[in-house]
Image 1 (spheres, rainbow, N blue to C red):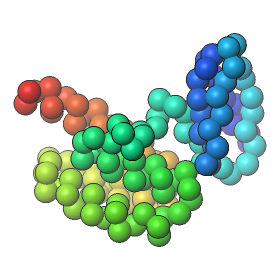
Image 2 (image 1 turned 90 degrees about the horizontal axis):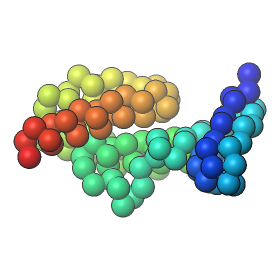
Image 3 (image 1 turned 90 degrees about the vertical axis):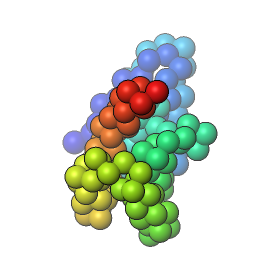
Image 4 (image 1 turned 60 degrees about the vertical axis):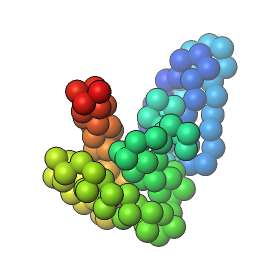
Length: 128
């Protein structure tokens, strides 16, 4: 079943390694196939990967978009190890993320990491 995507003016969407930028009007289209897709607001750039959880998200995002888990596995495992040591209260959610990633469900892993990014932001506000 095709995925229906609606984009606001000038919104971006990444499909695999391609970034589509909408024109100045709202657009709607269907994506049929098995390509990794992320909306602009669900992506993290190398520049914005500036916290432990955001770095983990960026790595998992690259695994997902490039469809290349082996290439990023060592980095991913190192980031998971660092995150476990840095924020021990995230141990259970990190295990959930790792279960998804090791099972090949990268998009589900990204969704779980986005939850952790929100929790990380809340913790930084509390400790600031």
